[in-house]
Amino acid sequence: MKSQNRWAHTHIGLTDVSEYKRDAIFRKEFVYKTGTSIIKSPKPDLPASIRDIQKNSVYMGILSINYARMFPAGDKVGISLGGGLYHFDATGVVGEITVLVGGVKHFFEPGIMGVYFFVSGSDPDEEDPIAGAASIRVGYRYQGPGGLLLRAAPNFIFINGDFSVFGGLSIGYSF
Image (cartoon, rainbow, N blue to C red; front, side, top):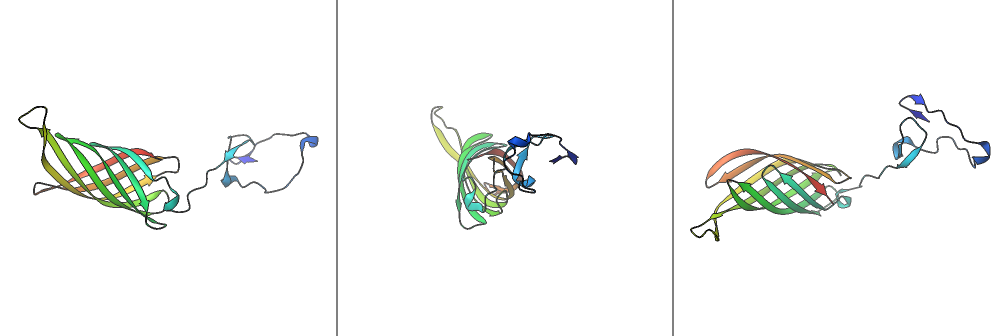
């Protein structure tokens, strides 16, 4: 076997050889211990379509922590519904719906999000909703076969008639 363009020299006794076959193992299908001819394990197969990837995700954004569930709508399209907690000057709850379009690891992820903020009213034990915000996002999502989830998107935010753009980054785990 060659490793890093060098032959890994090893030997086995002739009595231990049960069959010899040339080109029987394809390097791209297995994980090797570097510098040896030891096969560690087969590489995991990539999912064939969006239907085969992990459907549940938990992730932390710059200002939020969320859970989302993806529902396949085809081989390359899925709809993700999510929610979580948000904190920016005040604490709030967030709801989000996005569309995943792409392969099995890399996705275009447009969507909409709504946030409802809570602050203390006249009674410190009572919280009243005071404001809401809506956001349109146009983003990128990486969802690796091992569970790593990365999201990046500009968010076009509308709060009480005002408009602003806010960058969003999230890291999480899919299962």
